[in-house]
Image 1 (tube, helix red, strand yellow):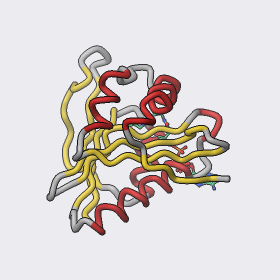
Image 2 (cartoon, helix red, strand yellow):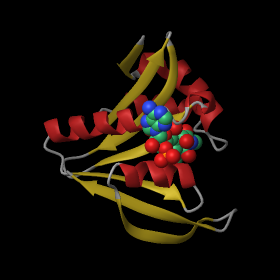
Image 3 (cartoon, rainbow, N blue to C red):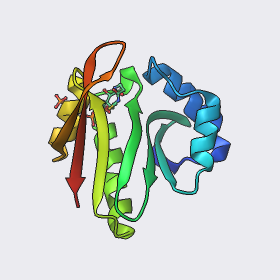
Image 4 (cartoon, rainbow, N blue to C red):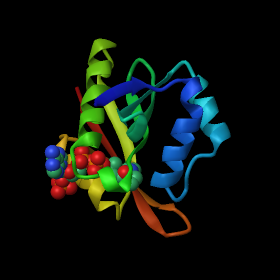
Length: 145
Ligand SMILES: CC(C)(COP(=O)(O)OP(=O)(O)OC[C@H]1O[C@@H](n2cnc3c(N)ncnc32)[C@H](O)[C@@H]1OP(=O)(O)O)[C@@H](O)C(=O)NCCC(=O)NCCS
């Protein structure tokens, strides 16, 4: 059964494992612990048979919520899971009267770009050659709620 789980400190190991599988430049377990402990973080995972298959790690303040990490295990992609997580972030933001969701992606991340445009995110600005090693730009996108 699919279930959305609010990720807290006690889920650190589960999050570290999924993060390792999804991102080549993964956050370390220490970074994940610090993030999950931050009272301004809001984090959710989609569980199938007690395994996190898709997750999103966010930080918020009164003005905006930022999606810092979002990922789906490769074999579970294109089933709408990340899209469902973004809808959950939107619902949380609206409940908290937070007016904006923002995020950043690498210019060549086509799947992420398609996902965000399908959720009506718009480009705000480009950080030229932000990813130094790959000489790639960062695209900053947001959605006003
Ligand atoms: C980007 C990423 C998070 C998308 O996750 P996802 O769970 O596959 O996303 P979704 O399924 O919600 O949406 C992606 C596609 O699935 C399609 N989709 C949505 N529901 C669907 C369904 N029920 N059946 C089939 N396809 C569906 C969407 O339309 C979209 O298709 P498109 O790309 O052809 O337009 C995923 O590719 C990923 O983890 N990438 C590596 C990490 C990463 O780059 N993260 C983003 C950093 S900015």
